[in-house]
Image 1 (cartoon, rainbow, N blue to C red):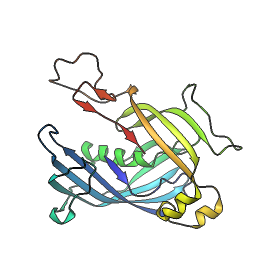
Image 2: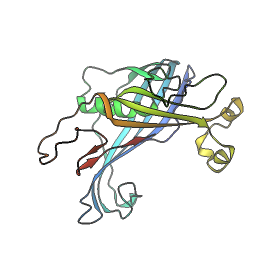
Image 3: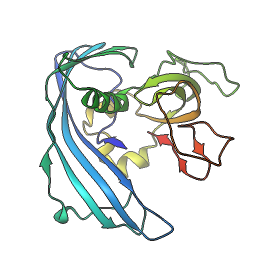
Image 4: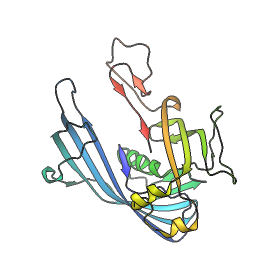
Length: 245
């Protein structure tokens, strides 16, 4: 799971720099045995410079990782004791790359030829957190669709969105963010002037991995289960996957 600790920006301001904290955790456990989790945390800083609303220069700096082996009674999302971690430098090239967009949708990510594939996949996963199709650029037919208009600040619709996990169906739910939420969570709008310029919107994205056009996965050794697809929402009694942003 990747988490970008800031709200995605829909209208990029040219000649403006943005900085994001990037954090991820990959943990595994045998729940039948106990709450012992093992895995790895990563962290970095993502810096962006907007050349225009549709082109960004980007760079990941100070990438680090730490091995984890802790008891987490609340599950994989529980707070982790940072004092027990030993952070080490993650061997990434840290070279500048470009992001090309169309109405908030990522069209291309251009990296240098010497960037290894594993690093490119990490970049794709992080950049995907900033992808916001608020104009329904890739909308697909659905009886649930209520497309955004100039007269309405609410919208619900489905798109087919490309990301590092494949090209899959994504449900967008857009609504005005209530004033009491902004007052109790001021970090949601780090620049107060944004709230003065217009309505702050709450955009929730939910991915349906059971409806994908392309799914870059393979599997081996899962016997005894026939009625499931690899990397779908639920894979027999073994795995389940979900993404909500």
